[in-house]
Length: 294
Image (cartoon, rainbow, N blue to C red; front, side, top):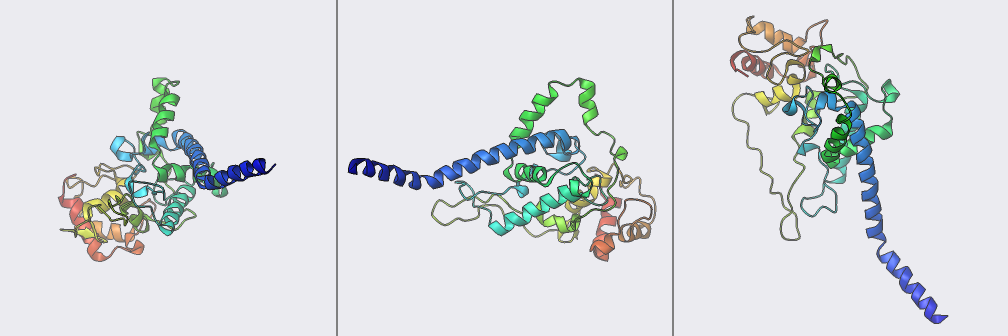
């Protein structure tokens, strides 16, 4: 009896000692399942505009890239990169959840939350957020190719938006993010390599000061891609909004300044002055679109 009790004690102690490893393995299994579900939702709903690999305009999509380092959250068990602080991770998840749930005003990004008339539950949106922050685009590609194998070429072509003008522009949403307030999430550095010693140290290159014209502290060309390209095209060729190339912009500088600052009634063009752009910011944008070729 004493021997049996001793063996039971050892077994129980071993179980307790391994509890953290068991819990972590269970969490990873659950996260993998959730990411798989998120990838399925992405293939069925999001790849039309963001691309099959989530790279946006880089792979012919019309929406911003979601497959980007700045949207990654590094876990505490990662051996290569410094873990993302809990507060920063929560803020990023909230931003992504809010954008998916509420859409983005003055763009073709619709409201996806079923609470606001969309088709997705909060649980499904959280699957998408996990997919994006974990960077599980391998699952998206795998599921996408399996799905596409059963489709004809005509069906595949129909899945991709080639004429963005057929999309409805979201006029209002339930969230608070606009291109300016979202900029910090696109610009964040997520992957910081750990030092060889015990203390982590950042090896990510530091962004130098912006040289030349800037808008809100960002080079004017970068600002255009992060804010204006959704409607005007990444090559300024025109999508929902008109083309913005020097040869097409034959009106006066004051005309375009007032359009950017005050918006255009009856269109999706917002008033950027009210959104936070200064007169100097707007002047830099006018000069950029009227003098710099795409």
